[in-house]
Figure 1: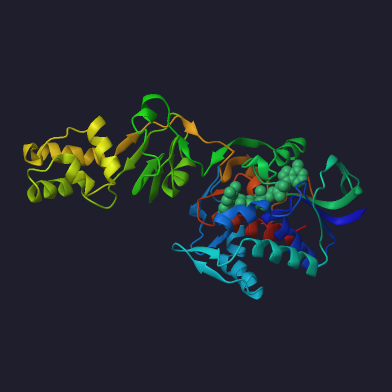
Figure 2 (figure 1 turned 135 degrees about the horizontal axis):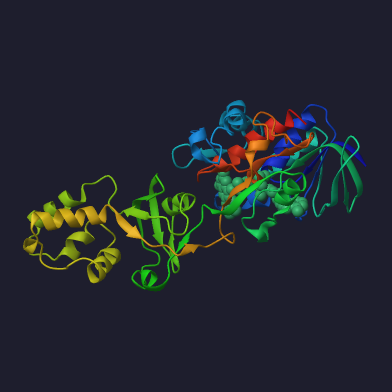
Length: 391
Ligand code: FDA
């Protein structure tokens, strides 16, 4: 079988590449080893797909080369994707500032992408693994259950390692290596953190407690909710900071973000001098957490017995609480994979390899990882669009 373009991976980036290439009259085959297309899209956003973020900017992405994502993001914006969603009459809403979700179901986004593929004659085959992939005269060749396939352009859109049960594999990294590309070290991102030993025991029983915090590590800071789990910490603030955290990195939590904690404690003392610290703290933090802090770390006594300096020091402690995480929940639950195909040898305007003409990398397989909130799909759409124009 002869095609102009073979796309491996029928996820967000692969389908977008196919739609744009098909729209240019290219003969496109998309293959995926999973039994259906867009499995991660289906799972995303709690089943409603946070399909973009209107505040997308290069600052929302991690990459060894922070400039790499700029060109593609500028040429395919959230509004371009919203226009497609609107054309398909998919109702959506803004959940948190900038974060757009389907009103009904993420199935609508997959349906839209497959309809767009069909409209431009793209062939999409699921349950279709690829083997013996190689460069051949005039392009690439491989074997599939459909038979022998040859194509002038090959697009690697196989994503990262997150959630193997949804079809994630390291295939894209293997192809990159096969063609001489460097693959930067990968690790789980947007993932809950685990605690162990005494660090876990001290928070035992707090599972389910949530509060707004500011989480800080490696120069990054995210203000959002944090959730205690059976094994450690989760919630959007923790997922966000997990992409910046590595074992041994200092992780700090401001338990009273946006407030002067020392002042709040002094006010508490003025209002309730006979009350114990844990009672006053329960007015500022979830009660179970306040009690635990006073059992393990803070001196619990009537407020009037604290001097200003003690309350200020305690406030400073609450605003910069050190957390010793032991690791992450790993790829089993991670939303993304950090690292991946080094962007140094990939064109930022076309996504084409500088080593192997006709070879393209799009989406999460590249060393470009977005923050939580619709940015990863926007990168998939934008990089797919850029490649779709060039294949
Ligand atoms: P993607 O992973 O989507 O697609 C890769 C495809 O390649 C898959 O279909 C896979 O089966 C296929 N494949 C892999 N190996 C293969 C092989 N050897 N042969 C053939 N095919 C192969 N982002 C966001 O912006 N908003 C959100 O709401 C969410 N929510 C979310 C929830 C959950 C649970 C997860 C795990 C992730 C998210 N994300 C997200 C992240 C987002 O899903 C992710 O960044 C994009 O799907 C990446 O798109 P890609 O097309 O690059 O890979």
